[in-house]
Length: 109
View 1 (tube, rainbow, N blue to C red):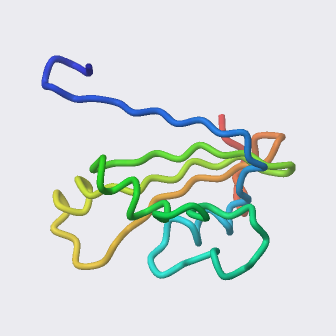
View 2 (view 1 turned 45 degrees about the vertical axis):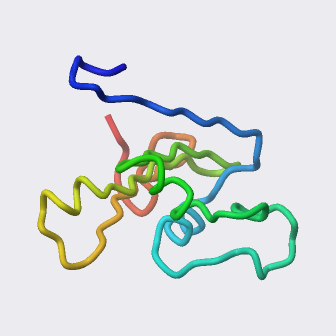
């Protein structure tokens, strides 16, 4: 459990090749489907896609991913959307390279 308020955490780890920042943005965004790419290595190839599968069991999802040139963290959060009374879905993503520089920005300290 979490901090006494009944919170729970479900962690899933895989041995995939990871996502670059653009692929993570597409995966967490609405309307993206990689099933029709036909490469056999896509998320959701066995049924539910990432968003529909995770949002059925959790209100918030953090994705930590790395690939050859970058590391990224993305958040898909129903709770954030509700608290902001958001009319549009916001998906925060932070990405950096192996040297610790933000992708498209400065070095993280």
